[in-house]
Image: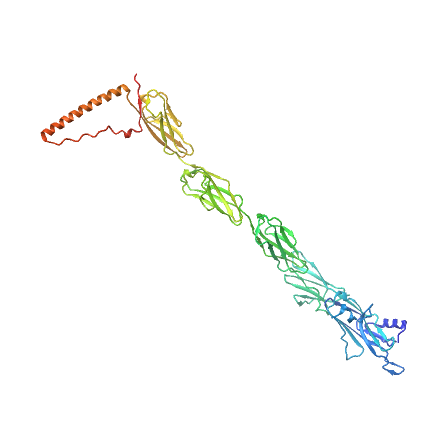
Length: 532
């Protein structure tokens, strides 16, 4: 039998946390009018209900044919709604009559609503919903973090929910901490795990908070070439999510963000890098990662040691170096048209350098990424004069009164200075490579020598000039000599014949033909005097 509106309003007033007897025989009494539960947890709602069982002395007047829970604005059975399928049950006790329960599992924030119990009897109009119902608030717990000191690991945590005046419990690394308050202050290390929960719903706590774990760093591509694009990535498991910063060792901040990008990497970018991951709990730094930028040789630099003047016979080292990664191989060449390498080492060593080693040298630096040749380096070997070479002009017989030029030359570095001397005279006759006697006389005959001298030493060479007789005198000398020779030959022949006759001695062998040995005079120069 349906109740009048006034009576129904009275029943609504009487639906409280504790059951109050109503004047009407119809009613629903809820154990709790408001419930606050954590997201992900389960909640149980229970109630008792009553209805008239007799009329005019007849018992079991009404029989309950159906009962269920529903939402405030929807009279349909809650268990039949797709949204609640699988996580709504009615675990009513069979031992107690007129008792019914609602259990909702895996609560979400969308489950926050007002839930009512409804029963239907066999009497016309004999249905009833407990109004108001049970107000369920599902709270997603959140932890707010305040760093006590940016340079320390201490932080203050506050737990928040949508529940009114709730009680909280805290967990650190899975262990319940003694504090039961909305805030919690402690020191936090990498790996520490912090959560809070509503008291009574410890199994459905807040999401865990933790400081950044040791960041991992990766680099792409694997082999890095100069001028290529390179990407360094940093990641760390953290809640709240970490913020990232990048550093090069012994340098200040390079970049903010999980990636450090080089659009065109340079050789100077080689070095060690690390990233820092930081959230409200603390800061964690990654291990160093080494960036090795590969590049071809740069222009080689060459040097010579000793850097002072190079003396013949001394030890000289030429060195070549080039910035390259991987390290360059070196080859030395002399710029004399001969492509044969002199050395395949960074150094070219002359243990006893010779004058013939003077010239231009060049080194080549090469690796798998390229090749560069150095600028030329000049080697100028200094040495004292070699044995001078002397000559006379004219080279034919020299007539008295003619001009005679003596010349002297010597290989030397630096170039030699020349001085002419006549034997047995202290004063030099002339200086310079050439010495000219314009009016040659018999008194000019004799030994002449030139001296070649530079800062490294001196050498000299002798020239022998001989003055001969005039043409008339020379003819008389030749005639007299011929007569004398004939006389000597006749006398010897007569003497030999006389001996042969007297003693029977064999004839002597004839005297060898030919004149005197003149080979030693090959360097003599005869001056012919003209008749006066």
